[in-house]
Image 1 (cartoon, rainbow, N blue to C red):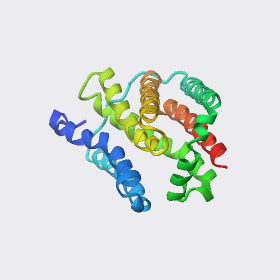
Image 2 (tube, helix red, strand yellow; image 1 turned 180 degrees about the horizontal axis):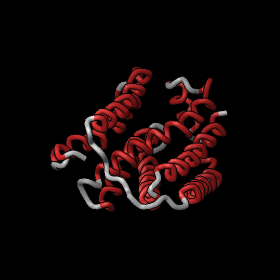
Image 3 (tube, rainbow, N blue to C red; image 1 turned 45 degrees about the vertical axis):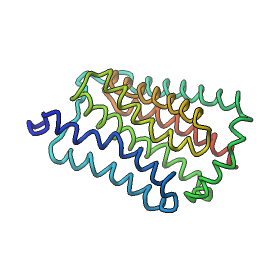
Length: 226
């Protein structure tokens, strides 16, 4: 990384907006201006892509791990299966509770127009959007925060910011307390993905785990909607 990116103020200018982009976008297209969701949702994603890409092309590099890649497939698959098992068990234990929120789920699905193409949407979200989030949150945000603070602090801050927009989404379906509780579990998952990335020196590890988790959640969504 060049010296012009070594000052704390410059690093904060790059990273602080990244902690807020997805949260701000979710507030806009879910709460403040849902009628403009077809524009605001892709605009948020474009901004989340353009901002780090622009700084990367300008010479900024997040911290990376130098160790050898070991057991990255095993760690990714095992963690994803573990998280997915917990999600499935939670769903079946409290299925009547989750089914009580189906009308709200249908309303949001109709607002975003995904009911008629749910399966392609689910595949895209599970495979490609999860990769996008891993590049954004684990590689760039977490890696960037490590240049500013200790690793554990970077994990905590990055994971809480990662979960924040999920809380806004969950708030559309569930009571605030439940949305916050699920948001906390997402922050824990984000922290685990940071640790997986750190331990194996491979972003593919956390991506594999993320794919399985998203696929499980979206499969449950299909069961509820159809």
